[in-house]
Length: 273
Image 1 (cartoon, rainbow, N blue to C red):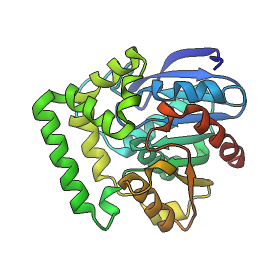
Image 2 (cartoon, one colour):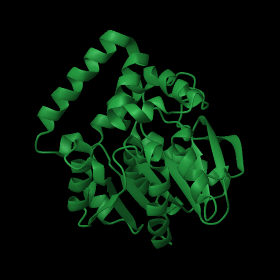
Image 3 (tube, rainbow, N blue to C red):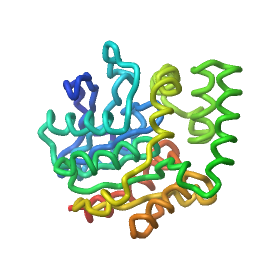
Image 4 (tube, rainbow, N blue to C red):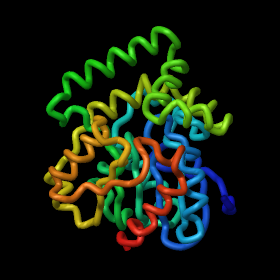
């Protein structure tokens, strides 16, 4: 794979300093990551798409190279959406297409409602809307038990490693760039203390989304069928009256299937204008 020319920097947005990476030229595309909030999640896919798009990735506030704001003790999807909108405005790239995955998909849903003027189209990949599922109580209890055990045995860092292995796969975890993996593990304390409560409590405003004029698609991985994140995506698509679009891989295809994912995203991004 040819690595694209990458520029990096920081911008002030919504009371936070956000680290970003910029690749390529052409229509702008913003990637929003979920747990551990690191721009590096999308490095391989961004390199592949940079021949056709201006690709922006960033570390969400308090994660990795975006410092934790002073006195910041709680967050919400609305705050995270305001960050993303501020980033695009500061870079002069609004409106942009956006892809959010996992928790980042929840951020994107809020962005569509709060700042539709900065988004020209959205790809919502496997939002973890557990509370919307018929078996929400069962899934929630199982996830809570696993989380409590992982935290008790390894603290936030060990629990983060277990979480990534479970969500992205053991092989993907072992093959991560060492610097990226270290940042992700270090972000464990922030994720479990501030971000996870905000993620699990978020409920999208479906009527507001139905009124949105921004085109969007709901995505799920073919290898995620039967998993709660795939079912969450299916629920959202049904609630919004649109078809579910399947893409290669499972919950984190940007790690283990970047080539296939990039090629699946190209026509979808083109359809968004």
